[in-house]
Length: 348
Image (tube, rainbow, N blue to C red; front, side, top):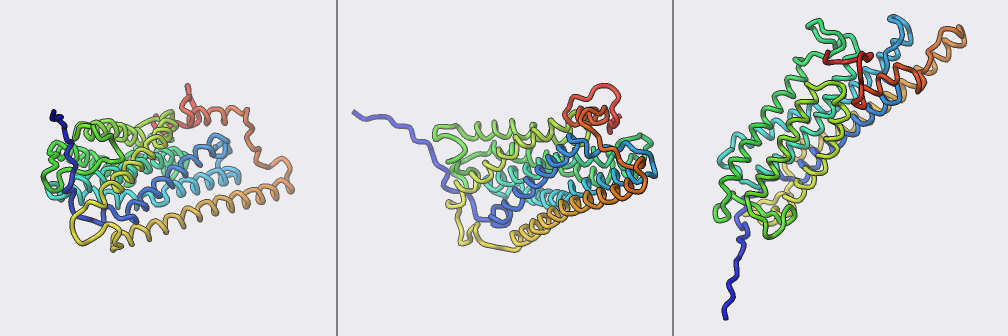
């Protein structure tokens, strides 16, 4: 008695290797850069929670200079590598868009997850950076609105451009998924680590895109147009999205890199990977220097205030206590529970 069996076709013609898209150096640099951005945003979040980012003293006082100096250092730290990350991430998306009909589906999906990591890292930094720089006079909006950074600054415009490119990439990936065909070169990929063997494709892939893309786009938009109460939400969502896209990026490469046609290998080290790793090294160095500068600044500030106190006991910086109202207002703004008139609202 013959048994009827249904075979699920396996994608055999994934495409050709492209180390400049799927190379270890490329993927590693984007992932580590996004992680660094999240770490910096969390660091600033806890500094604010501890009351270290207040501006409470009178103008032209030494104490106020120290408070503003601390904000400048922190703001600079937040942008370590962010502009470069946006530039390279945007270039990667433009590469995919310019080869819309020629790029294989596997590499297109890989670019989507890589670009998503850029969006995650930049969203956390932009939200925190806008919050800290709004307290420094030279960064205030030129349109006369107090305590808010201009939403049309060069850095904001660059981020808007990235969001627009990312939306175009999402549309392209959705269209190409609709052309899924295991019998045609570059129109399918293996899903060993991202779905079960009986999963229908491209339905599962469209579902993944439909869930993760709007989620990230909303977070990116809130990072520049939202209010202070959204900062905790943005950081929380970034922490949640980072492992999702990191896993899919690694899983896609692991499942498909061994089934590509051609003499090249995605493990080949080429110019693109070299540049990415060098830029990552520069970013890590700047991040270490940023933390070092912050520590040195705090030491010098403490020494300067100690000398001032020794000469004039009544002229010194009163460090905020956990019960002070200003600390409470700042904590509420950063924790997403600010009510009423706080000391800072960058979007009013």
